[in-house]
Length: 434
Ligand SMILES: [Zn+2]
Image (tube, rainbow, N blue to C red):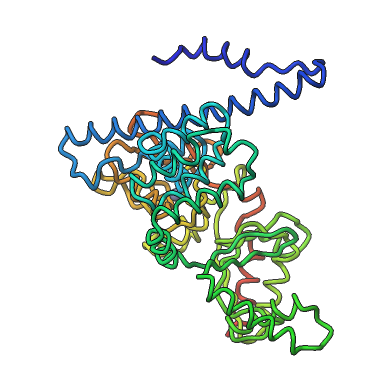
């Protein structure tokens, strides 16, 4: 039975009250109590998540949904309710099911506040390669007596879980390592001061050999650059085939206002797949592209709503053929439009499905990542896209339980408009590029 929202508010008030004039000992005790409350809340969330998953699956079974398609989208619903990304929703649900169905001692330790949600997640993660029976054994051995784990640091706790897993089933741990190789990948994320972290996840032997090759380069180069600089430059040269000093000849979509491009205005520009960059840096990139014979720079005109700054259309002369429209939606949305998702766009999807007479238009089109596109196809999801009074593109997601969540296309700042000057610059850039 769920308490009414009014009585719940009252309970929250009592549970979360902090008296700033309380003495020091009382304050420390309050912090410990609240920490315990967070852990207990995480355990309760896990119970609710596992129950939701079970309820949905049995309802879908009764409705004749084939087994592989049952429960699709539940992780995304949990993510939305927790204001978290769908990828984390998946982890939350996996964590919940493992605790509820296979790891009662870890669940109890979480409930009593002996473990935090993160520390319980570490144990679940290290036991993920085991079969149910071994997992239960690990659970009992590590968390059967909570005194045993009290005081362990995160690293020690994960190592203890790993050691037990290895003893119970050495093959599973080795198989997991082999499976992890499939997850090798390269990712990029912004770093402070207009730098970026380019990260490669590699099998340990490969990663070490790449690092050793770069270090060898640093050991044999003496030209005033630091070791770190030599290694970074060598990496760029090996990958792009060009010296690190010149811009790599690959296409980047840079979105900036005419005012930013022509100087004066400091509204940041945006690189698709990266994020905002300072106006000064954007102007430098354009200047370098124009000045370098081997580079090409082309301008595409985008219309922004004068008040909200949201992109409302592509160049007016362009007909809305699918590729132009897809480009527009990608530049407008930048990231998957599911709230909290942030994953790169992989599909331009019809908010109102094409099969239900949803038009192929900028308004009805939304950018979604692979996972969210898949989830949206599941029964019970509905998305309504619109342009609101301020000119912002909005998408309202309704989940199978009727909860509503909405997202807006990111604003561009008020200065992105089409201008005569931009056209002339466009011609100049094209001439340089030719
Ligand atoms: Zn997504």
